[in-house]
Length: 399
Image (tube, rainbow, N blue to C red; front, top):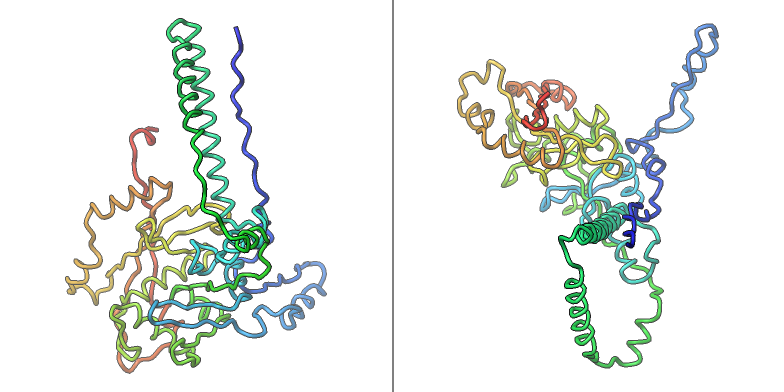
């Protein structure tokens, strides 16, 4: 009696990943210098804090602002400078590559496909994840095969299965495969010059044609909230003043786009989405679009390279102010939603192990025509309420 070989439970070989903790050490594209500690029994420590606050050793903002190009056709801001792309992605995970799923890695993948760099050289997060999934899939196939062999041997020992018939069938299958393997197909001949070029390693590098694409909310947060981005109109190549960016983005969130000089309602799409975006970014979350999972935003604890998104955000306007008491069209059309809509989204989020967060944005009444306030005052008129929604399952929530 022969003992079956043990199941191979060893983890597949992992590829060396970049040091993400060092690469994404800063949560925002700003340089923050902590103040020295305050020692109560040492009065000179207070002087040290005042000097460090008034005369910082490092500047928080870059010497020259990063530059982005606003494209009305795509309703987004394009970043073409490589240094700016690295700063925005590595420090806050802003935007996405227009030729990549998330991180702009098209040029690296293209260079590897052409043989400019090695197969295991400069692996991106997307490639590491793809290889790890492939290894896990092969590992599961091998484990299932070994378990099937073990089960067949056990049944054969109990007299419930005869392995001779299976072996004959396997022998016949191998003989048929070997007979078919004798068929030879000749490929068309290539000229010597083309064969020589295919064996040579490419010398010329690949031109990077990928750019970072920012949503309007991300661009306004970087421009207004952090002050590290200046915008230029891609059509006219003229700089967009800071005071005109809000009205420009509010107009392009409508379809068809409206003029920036138009009078917008307090519940226009850009204001609702940016209030929620600014709210969660100020709390330290990494906010990314969530259209893939039928939600408005996805919330990451540190970023996409560290873990999956934990929460999906749904933006719902709330008209609790007395000004909207008689406006039934807004309450019935925007505030009230059918139950099957919420049930469908909650079911999708539960399948991918995400918690749905209902974010109710309290819409303020319209401003008077003769009253002008800045962006800070305009955002202060909005308030946000969060409600966590979980799908109750009988099999999982018995206790």
